[in-house]
Length: 257
Image (cartoon, rainbow, N blue to C red; front, side, top):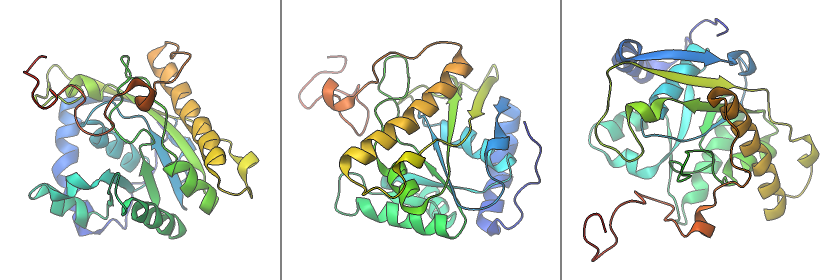
């Protein structure tokens, strides 16, 4: 991992978060971090990553912070309503995403404004924990591509693997011991120059998004030493719910049904 100085101007709330969260992460996880030289030391940038566990934002923030940047996540709005945690997340300047509502676009306006201020914006293009049976990256949503093409900022693909061993998808019981290794690998900026100056049509955004998801998948293949499925998992085609736990029983259905 490329050694850089830690961010200095982080504010009192982020400093508190570092003091509270980093020590247990250091104690209970091992780190295999690669490619941090691809993360710009300054200036607006979008970091995109796959989503394998509710624990992975902690591992990801640790990785980005030690790479010298302060991460600002687009996070689902429900996180901001959790007692105590929600207040802290808000004070940290994270951006709420109101999924499937008329307010959904406000998150992307905030992300664009953050990029213009030179911030490091983190976007999960899948929008939720992967439903793919092998936890490979799914078909992505177009928000990251839209922000990048509107601002011209670089998009850095980062893959992560290992957080799901601490907390499985939709599990509520963490497994801290034995210590699990957090594998994170950043790649070079996604090549999006072919889309520069084009109208941001739905087709353009979908194609740019596929470039982004392919770059994240490539990094994950390197970490796992495996090849991803030829066809990316599509929640809509599979008829899988796009929010919440897909394994929970439907109304009127018994547990385990």
